[in-house]
Length: 419
Image (cartoon, rainbow, N blue to C red):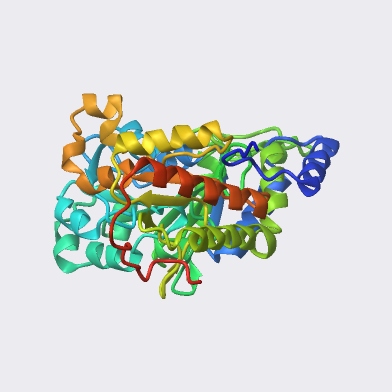
């Protein structure tokens, strides 16, 4: 049996949307992108949505929008994909890494302790689709002490008057926080539509704005759309209209727009996301949880509690009591059986580039502990019950043959999937 890790969901509706785009002979930014943005607004109830060509470019754009520059600091978790920190470096600023909690997400107390007068933004990562504790993070950045030390230097910073809270929601489209889309809980939320994500456009992303009322949402939307097109005041579709050839460049922008040919893929998927694709992921997560819950070594990923619900992008289980080397051996054994798994993520301070610029994994013990015992299992709508059973039985057999099983069952948590 060969089980891939995370193939894109390409069905006939996706093919039809792409063919429709090709038949209309408009493949760059146009009506499909606009329709996808509207679907994202409907899904998240955000105030504005701007599609871009990747999460990374969206993050760079929003940091530049806020005036992030050399000398500024942006707090990020040490346990994330490299793009979170690289987007900060691309703006010339310093990523201030902090450790995470047992639920994989950024530790609010570490954030509080890391804030300085140079802190301009926080990028909180919704690991595997599990929302960060945004109410606590928002309480920290709006506290009188933190607001007092904030030093605004641009018009956007003066208007907001505090640290900008950005959600790295690359994993978390469809996640919920206290009954609303988790995307609503931060100032800026940025999704990824990379090929392995819950919704894909092959490559792509989307910026969602939920800024305070002091900002004019439509003005910001229009400005950011121009920013994605080199600061040009007309997109290609507008220029193609009769007599619409004349345009102007209003400021130094970026070229990071999403084309319609990509948007078409995501458009087909998002139309069936809440009713089909997302429930299918939840069913598989529940099967995994129930299949492993009696194993003494099983540590469940956070999936649902009274405040939050994941979008089940990953199933990142941890194996209690093993070393990093044992974890790697278990992965090798699964691979030999045709089961493709992954590890999310190698903490940033373990990567050569970040080690060279001074980050040390010893400063982030929880990140390392989570990483060293974590295995991400396949989870996607087309994964069959037979395949899920094979994955469960194979992992149980392999783990039990490669380790001394703990004598006590891992304590259950309110973060676990209910039976």
